[in-house]
Image (cartoon, rainbow, N blue to C red; front, side, top):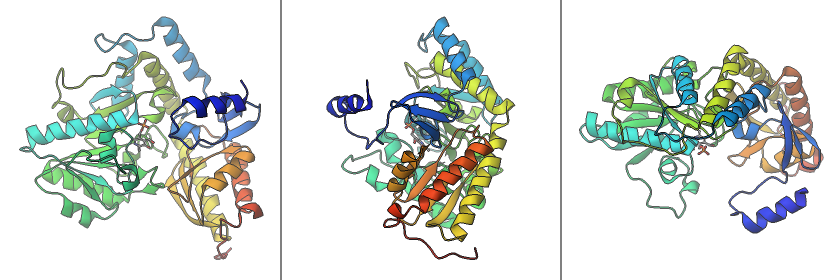
Length: 408
Ligand SMILES: Cc1ncc(COP(=O)(O)O)c(C=O)c1O
């Protein structure tokens, strides 16, 4: 099928809830992908942080081997791929136990259920959950209720009650929202969809202390930041704290649908048999692929590569900003970068695509980069060349107002 036929079928039969970029893919290798017309792209989006190693042959091989062995059995039976992945996740994190699911939003739902149960049994019926303004936690109704962006709530109410929104990095204001009714605080260490805003160290440490004081759960949404992306295996490791619950998703299944909530023994203990369930969650093929991915991330020091390559990219954007590129701010950690432009980001993303580079626009003006963690320095240099020359393109000048050079 050629691209025009695919697009026509999509428009005719698929619910039109995405404003898709004008592309469909035919194959991938590492951080490179080819479209249906044979054009090659350097992928700095990685399927929105899902393809943690791009298309990796070892991950592919692990998934194929599991498909050949058995594909699904349900959670009524024990599963070796699940058990091995859970052991790995527990061994590399603060956690004692793992709940498996399929999507990020579902992992948030599990976290919310545990938080409410925790409030009931440990905090005399406390039900309030504090979430952050500007956050994003997914599209199911519970995950939407804790997403701090009103545009996602439009005409969907009433949503889950008992959610209070705090301004990120304002500890005093956050503390004021907490009371004996608070059962949990939920935060992304780096707000992703909201425009790549990194939480201050003092703020996240302060949230931990506030939760400790009130015996509320600290839940971190590491669905986008987890598994090496920010330059550490988990973003909480930048902050010198540990959460009680952590939601993972995106790259956890090596490109296949898989998510999880990692929990301390105490937090996990409020759920027993029958308190949660899933038919497909923890699918063996996704678990096998995820285990292969994590082994590579650890053995080939992918978090360190993300810190090094991402750090250099960030520095290059900051230098371009000083030299007058139409950049308002550069934010992020490791290979989770947000470049806030001086105008809408979508036309820039479209122009980059025409020049063979995939990225994404978020929060209106933010160019978001979430490349595979094995991005080489040579690929990063090539990407920076394309991005910085595109930002100088006169065709985009109307939308992007250049800023005066600041000590170039
Ligand atoms: C931080 C964060 N939480 C939750 C989600 C929702 O994940 P999913 O789309 O897999 O439900 C996302 C997705 O972008 C995310 O970035």
